[in-house]
Length: 449
Length: 81
Image 1 (cartoon, each protein chain N blue to C red):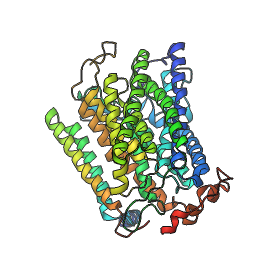
Image 2 (tube, chains in turn yellow, green; image 1 turned 180 degrees about the vertical axis):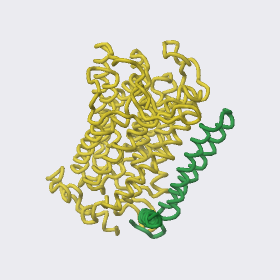
Image 3 (tube, each protein chain N blue to C red; image 1 turned 90 degrees about the horizontal axis):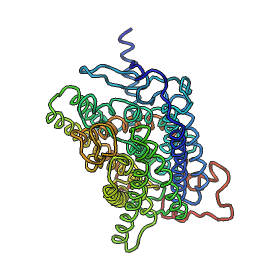
Image 4 (cartoon, chains in turn blue, cyan; image 1 turned 135 degrees about the vertical axis):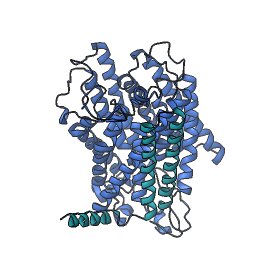
């Protein structure tokens, strides 16, 4: 076990603590935005179920993180299980106490990091709901979330944020500053996106989504207003997420929060505009849902290097993210037969990986302390640290998430019965719909599903 | 006793992989193998260039594994799930 880094409990000044709390307090807006987007992109007959699922998985994630997730994640300098491999300390897993015991909740960086982890895991939990929309049982989603929030997220978050071996690649092996993921492009978005991919595969496509010829049919979302308003809420939340992550996990000075807000907003805006332009060119008019996905992709991609790139670089990051998302949503649906109603795989997994890679291209950090002489020099080996982080997400987190959901599906089938899908999850699982005065109909099933 | 325990392990593994297509299983094994190559490269190789080459090789193995996982999930012609 590694000992704590220092004696005593460091505490921020009151203004710093207050600002961190304010930033963390913005993060739930991201969760609200995602919930609205997922609901708006789903069917009308499942709207109440979608919002109910969002609330339930959010609650489960927060509770599991409190019970044991935080003790796995830890924070830099806290006691941890480590192994000496090749003469280097490999910090593998935090060894904190369960139930937040022994965590100084008096404004210490550790307590603020725990609070940020608690709201971050809520965002992670909402990501797979987008890909499992319209066919995922409520209690199955809750159990799956418990596995995600209790195992995959805290382990990777410890490696990336909690002083784990990925974060130490710089100190141990001279690979730049180690794995940089200030706002959670990897720890939040890619982990959630890979869970979304697993869920989409395990559940299978919705009834009527694919014809006998294997061609996808359009099942448009039921409320574009929810989707687009969700984008605005997500921006507020992501500004808080990126800023708080940069301060607490990447150790950047508070003054750089302004840069983080600017970068986050620019990446989202350019991501949305790029997606709108691409869909205009391809389909003759802009597509609202893909534009929203482009916006989300820009937010996600901005996270990793939010405090380490110049605003012009954030514009480039957003443009690439918007293009990747707009093109990959269609490609995934058409060529991979993945039914992802919320576009979660593209907007989170693909854009998140791009965000991690973008740090190697645009990241500019000084080798020493992060002072205003910033944005000046690249770091040798940083690209390799980012690639190792991505390899860990693909080679460890994805099999872990897929395997846990596959076993869960063997024990408890996660997909709702065909009758429930036909009737709508609102009535089937909740007994009441979101819009009682609206008659739902099932004409799309007439084609054979 | 050891033989019984070994047989139990074998049954447990068989039970676990039952229903898991070979291609999918192989894909996930390649994902894990690729990650293991990446980790081994960090630990064992001091030269920056050789380490980078092995990390990239490990990622190539992961991509191969991911491609197999994708392939194992594609719908068969005429299949509607």
